[in-house]
Image 1 (cartoon, rainbow, N blue to C red):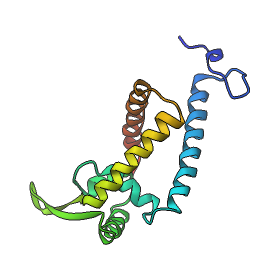
Image 2: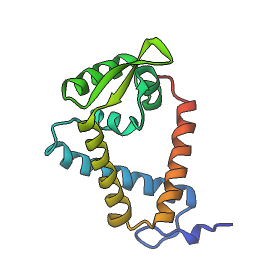
Image 3: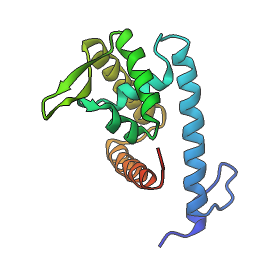
Length: 155
């Protein structure tokens, strides 16, 4: 069993594991937000649209993507239009249901996604010094958190 003294704050006073986890999440979120602000000034693809590119690991219906990202379908449609205008995605008929459309990355979209994977790897492994094993564990935990949050959201 973990004891609060096993987790130290930046000031070396004991922190409960629950609060230590929150402090880490807060710090990581702030750090990522500042990096995204830097990227926003260099890349002509807004933050929300880059998040969609990350989620497009395979072609997906707009409704599915909206649910995964917890946004309204109308928000996703507008963003998909903008991504399509930038040449990063295309809409294709769903072969399983010809009435439905899939959003799919173009070559440029796939290149952007690949560069974001490299950026994430650099951030997590080099900057934050996570080992490959720690990254794998963090990814599993983060995806579990995401799935459980999705159960409690309404979009």
